[in-house]
Image (cartoon, rainbow, N blue to C red; front, side, top):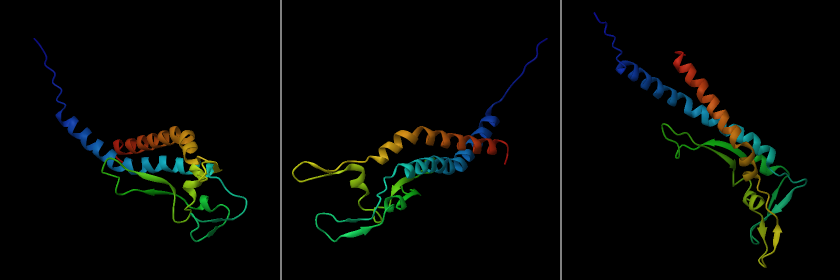
Length: 155
């Protein structure tokens, strides 16, 4: 006498594939945004602020007046529709160049035509990345898992 037990995984595999597709569809946008927001908050803490307002021009062009804290006000986090795909969601974190055109010079510094340094670099973007990237990745992973549990629980 013998007993035969069969376990057909085809239906299970199909259900898991559907659940996986739903998880990615629902989790990817918010998981990416959670990570971007962690980076954005850390960036706001690193952005240098001048004590007083200042003028800005590039090589003698028209001068523009900027109030203290202008670079901070120009910071943003935004969805990049062009770079995003179904399974990849991209958010950009940085500053609006039009609102703070001097941001690049703050981050990279400026040099005199003689080769000397006029303004030393303040690499606030790099510092932020080094300080916050692990936390941002963890926030994204945690949010992804939250949504995955919701999908698997049928919510």
